[in-house]
Image 1 (cartoon, one colour):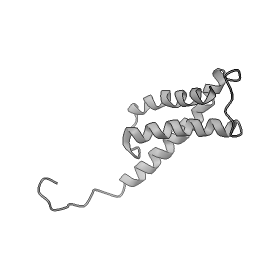
Image 2 (cartoon, helix red, strand yellow; image 1 turned 90 degrees about the vertical axis):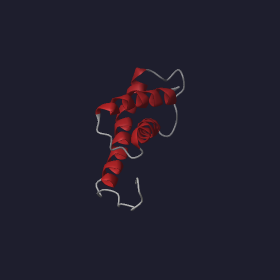
Image 3 (tube, helix red, strand yellow; image 1 turned 120 degrees about the vertical axis):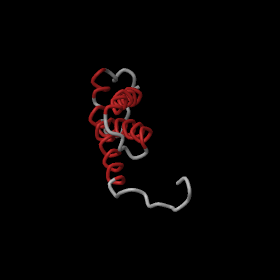
Length: 97
């Protein structure tokens, strides 16, 4: 149950990426994956690689995923921003390209 709470918190924070310049690696889908993976992995790290059960899940469990989702988003954004700073794509010389 805690894994669901972590992933849902990552999903909720992902919605706010619409207010950020789109430099995520993989675009909005990359941001989605980064937020969910970061939230889930951070939650696992906090609980010693175990997932708390239904009775051990509460509001604090969901809040634990916030730093992980933000870290995941920051990593995906950093990779995407560094890949785009290398200048424009070289021209292919093909018509319409």
